[in-house]
Image (cartoon, rainbow, N blue to C red; front, side):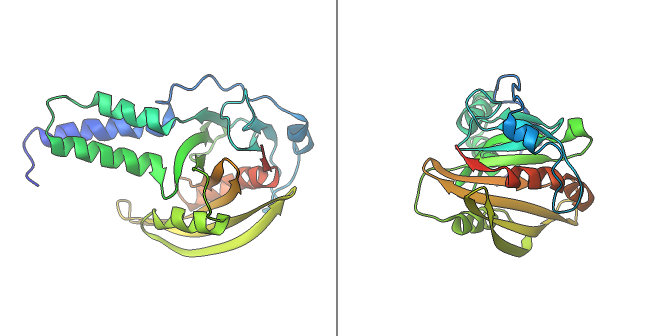
Length: 238
């Protein structure tokens, strides 16, 4: 593919536009997550790592920041925002220059797909740890109803993410909800750095749900694990 003089600038503009897709381009309403009885009960619960984490409310029910096929508690001070993958992709397309080379449009679509979709699921919500002092997100992905079990969903989710290794799967049960989680390593070729990540999956009548925790690096990831464990421990099907 030939690269013209103006093409790198357009690519940078597209990448910059797409970089905001998971951090506010969905036009979601202001976070109105409210503490519930479940949140109060879990307020001082300890995590597997032995670190206590307070609940900041329940995510998933109608009227919460992200309406999902599941509900779970998010850590105190973490901020949730819904993502409409379809609308976000349309916004990227609308932002492209009408006179742009078709190859540029194809590139923008490919980047949007890579950001908004992973395997059988699409981005539906992200919970930002920055207000609580960490750099990272809990991201929630949802899919269409199907025949895959949670293990198959997670395997497809990881298969769609390049440069993963040492994946360890295990089943879990939380309040009658059965699922599968995986802990693995992700290697960034750009940063030449390997870090720990984790994800869990459950299936519902409305489709599969994946909750993923990344982080800027392994240290940040480990510091945020209590929030991930709180979500897993309080997970319920809506």
